[in-house]
Length: 171
Image (tube, rainbow, N blue to C red):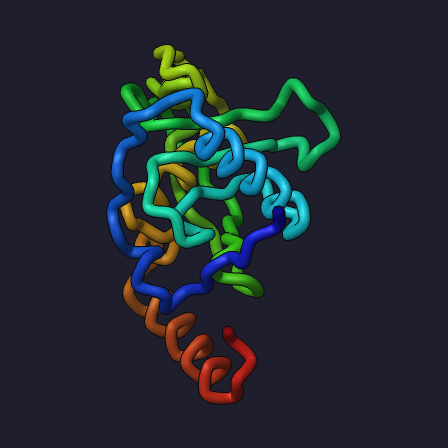
């Protein structure tokens, strides 16, 4: 089921998510399926549960945007355990549509996460995958990509969003 993606301004997006404690449940499988469907419908690369109003530490990523099944990643209770190098690239967010800005992140990361059965998994990521992993894990910690921008750039975007809200173009 495609769910509504919350937009910037919704307080849920800036809250820390709760760890998943029960694995391999019908509810968890349904949440993940809904997240895939919602992300693909929005033409995204990643989606975190808080973006659909669920404060659980769950995220999905597909850097192939549906082209390569092997690129699909499910993160449950993820943590970045290692970072190396730097990369700067344009980043956007399904919760902040229409805005893309350069963000500097690690070029390589190692993520300790769990799969739907609760088994521990280590997932390495480089370049786009490293960026997507860091972006989605930020969501689970209540951090948006705007937090990585300069105060000036962040304020400029916030003002534009306020204008869109007043005009009724930001629901």
